Image 1 (cartoon, one colour):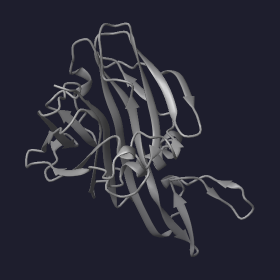
Image 2 (tube, rainbow, N blue to C red; image 1 turned 180 degrees about the vertical axis):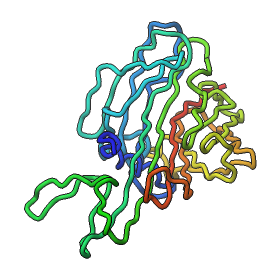
Image 3 (cartoon, rainbow, N blue to C red; image 1 turned 180 degrees about the horizontal axis):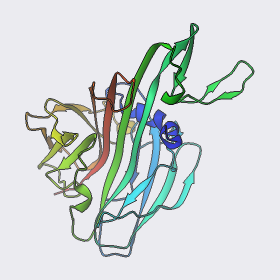
Image 4 (spheres, one colour; image 1 turned 135 degrees about the vertical axis):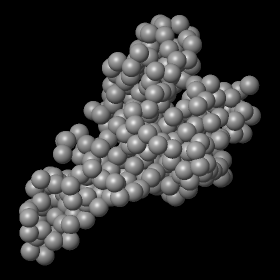
Length: 280
């Protein structure tokens, strides 16, 4: 089990909560998604909160943040800082095309019993009887005589797309692993009043009947959240119309029994992105 995956597991769990519930949801918010030239910077906020894009609960972790440059090679974040309620960082857009910024987490969570005592695998560190910090166990540490073994493989993607100059599609190419967005409509070419089409894939195959939640930002300033639950077609394609310009949070989850980790009964996958919709 990778240490990073364990540290980010709490964030992955947040992504699996339906948007209609009152829950703390993890989000990435770029200062913009479309920039001209190759002398621009994008600033990204990362936090978990009830009201989307309003930091009032806890910051996101920066140690798992990745940057993909337009040619697919690794980039870097700069000026990273974590405060009480949010983390913030910059990415210098010094190459033309579409950049991808976000996190990919993979972890294992669950529990088992030894001698009637329950022990946890993955998740947050626990606290012992004397206040000591107890690190979660890995699957390799589960003894052969353990009972009531209940393990779930968890995978999560939370990513945004930012374009400098003309949009490109290299970083939009699916990897064929886990739950992914295959953008038929480029995510940086969204316009209010026009319909966008996104195909969702699980291990490279269309995910039919997938429930996808779309939530506009700005809930703090209106009575209703405005969340919509949409469903992918038999080809895995989701059609989304945008009633107004602004930032939108999109999230979906998927479960099956195809875990790749020994002794895990199944897996739970999630995908989250923040999209900017422009005025016509």
